[in-house]
Length: 306
Image (cartoon, rainbow, N blue to C red; front, side, top):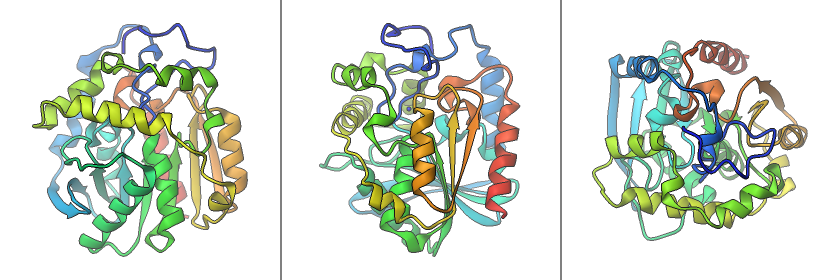
């Protein structure tokens, strides 16, 4: 949603932390050992060798940026908070694109997508994605959302069920008690300098807006501080087959994922070794060993092909 900093509020099971909406703040506690970034860059560069379509669409007052990879059944990728397409999904796009048509999106004020004069909300993100699908003439698709994107994927299934075939909700939050209280206290005093450098770099590499980084930081923080639970009845209304994914050292509590699994009648739950986003190679969690993403792709493919 990095080097050691701001770790004093870390609790035992929080060892991996990206920005979940605005979870820039504790990501630095994840994998404190030295990382080989030449290996990371080499792995991430694979996606740039893929053929792709890149474009913008006029969506509810935004110039919304998207990228399309591969052929086959359509899978929409929804990034985490404070992130870009590449920082969340850069390590798995080359693997997923072998058998699927991927539609990767950057949401309001993130990456290359413009901003508008309103606060961020998961409901609005869901409506923006629905409108983009209409513009791209995508009747229905599968959706993979990570962290904030996972919460947005749940909102798409709630608000636009006709658009959804299957949902993969990875490290998604639907209730405040899904994260321990120190996080919520910490969010109230969040500062832009707390944002992991990898996410800063990912934004500045693609955005032409010099002030955009602070804008997205504070908008994401505000959304998280004011986050309200999604009512159980709305979660129960989700009928699409759903795969819930969680790291065993995730910022999201295992109990939260189990509760979500029990509320969505047609759902499966997978708990993967690692932290928040490590299982898909999210940029702040990368290690020299990148092969765990191949296992994750197999799990996703098996679910989508059922």
